[in-house]
Image (tube, rainbow, N blue to C red):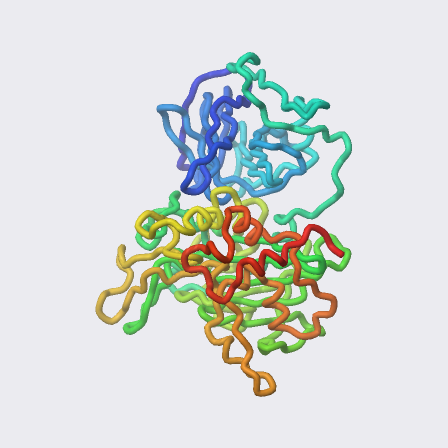
Length: 543
């Protein structure tokens, strides 16, 4: 097995967490918040981002978060290793990033868990012996295990006057006045709540991906930063240089009656092998699922809208009471039981990657004589397909809102000069150029800056709907993510009790918190979306 090795300096315990090196990499712009450094005495084996074994030697390392669910360990003046982490959640009330080591039921497994103030966490499982199979994928540490670790490793609690404690960890004197992360008393457990990751995993689709043997790798779903950087204009040429680990993105928006879940599947290339056609760098297509809060922990899936290039298609489960709105319901969802839930099945084309509910596009149905991959959601990390005809490949899930992720990158580059940006050409549009062999310059053209994200997905012809001789206004570009409740209210009838006000909508609240408003819009913002009117849909509580 190929193995990376990272060396450092010997210390007294396996993992002694210190808080002296405060560095947090968020997308392109470092900020003042920081992650702990960690000190490792005994070598521990982790899984590197390229799927190889990474033996991290004894030493003290800076621990940085990168885009999505990825962590970088770096020793001063030494090597760097990228580790794949599992996105999870925690219930600890902290006011700065904080790391703990968490013991597993398996004594050979040790978790390094980075807790973030927003309730999200990144879990990196390691093996002390290194004696693990290729399928080594322990579940993330439970919230109870995390809580126990916090109680053991961070006993400092905000005092009764509300003042933070003083850090007295090794290498830092109390006299220095360095402030430790605040960990509040948790003797009273919080109310039970399903996390966004739990919800997204429960409803994540089983995904049929058609492939073309001419260049099957270009049809694998993976992370945007699969090549270990955030630059959008080198994804085409890096296709065969890095492992394409199965991956999907998600976000959760909540009203009083529903959850709205967006899923996105990224491909480095939208390609063609036709003589007269068009291709482009980067491709992200996906879907919106809406789930009614019916009193059960995960709710009931009521319908789906998928993105098929520049068109949206809508689907409902069998027996649904929902009917046509201003758009026609295009078919019934196929549902399949897997990992404790009844999941929708989706399918994407090869090459162009248009997405619909299964089996409404492509000629891949999972038969042995067909080219294609069947991806299954997994909380334990994604896998690289063995080839273009792999029938069970795990894909991992990352929140669009993850620290350093695609959404934070969008906010950071919202009004940045195009010459300075690395990810976005304009609002909701990836950069993409003609480098690396995109197009042949003669019969196959290469379209630049052609791929869009959920906050710019658009149905190009929904402004042509006529009801009772009245032409209805179109659904603005980006509404599928930014205002999904309104889109669903337009696409479907028979919704019953249905709120269009948001208890949680990070897309809108983050824009508001960054100072954007109708008089100060991001570059390329959809002209028909009034930002102030969207902000008015944010509410603190229900009824």
